[in-house]
Length: 403
Image 1 (tube, rainbow, N blue to C red):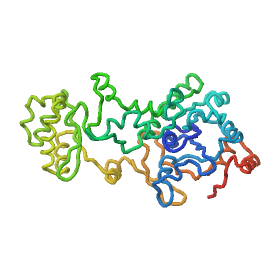
Image 2: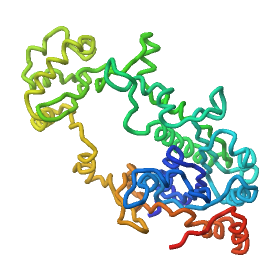
Image 3: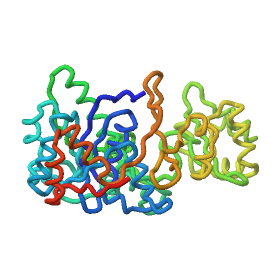
Image 4: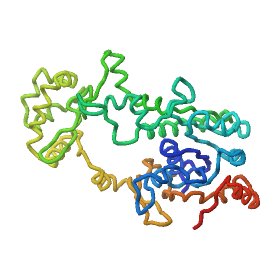
């Protein structure tokens, strides 16, 4: 099967991570993604570590299933190539700095005159408008400015960047949602539209309760480790041999009595300081050392079985090697292998979507630089081989790819 987005064609003018992550999801779901790369070197991530047998795992992981076409966008002839492709494309995604696409003559106003149905998404650090719009931004910049680093880490410690590139990835997720919303709306209006997607806006959108706590209390949220700001216990504990997490949310079906019985601290059940989740949170400093001492007396395996048998939400704090080897991850095919032309199939994280009818059969390989240049220009832009050769001779495209 081709996947639920089979039939959509995406023109991908993105680089590094935020945009490629968006277009990766489209390719995973069956869309045809034509990745436009500069002739010299292509996407910068082609040279980004980590490497697997000399190939960039970074590039492979977010560019699987795409077609690669080399075009020098800075030349008038290169811009014309994009204009000749756009009538046959549903979506264009780019993550250049604001203003760059207008310099190329490839802004939304220009391309929408050629194809009024095109959905054009621009991903940038701060958006197309505002006092920061022309400032450069990478993942850590928007994580810092968006507040997530200020609430991550241990209490009293300095700012901590989460271990994943959330600035880029969250922007990619919001971009995909916005684009598909516009595709749906186009069915009614028959018209495309422009989507201005800011990484900073996207990062702030993930702060959920932190913003609410500030506005409702006036207090500035800070890092509180693994704990939850409203529920207790809801955090990581160190057992005799490993870290585990336990989550009790309180409320009508408060599992606090079960939890206290399990750790043999029944005297805590009726202690007025800990009668409900809110009270336990207010008295956190007195409570947690008692819980930690009890849990440190036995192994992670013991506690995970004990809590699970009682229906208490819990889990191990897995390192990455344990994650990829987890039986649930294996059962769900969360790690799959994509083929590669020069090395053994490469394990990557699968798309998390599981459809009842239209799940794609497999993920495609990441393309070599310029691998599909001639194919795309002949089949989509309807170029003659003579015209393609002229573009190659003038350095507008590069067709040095060989099997």
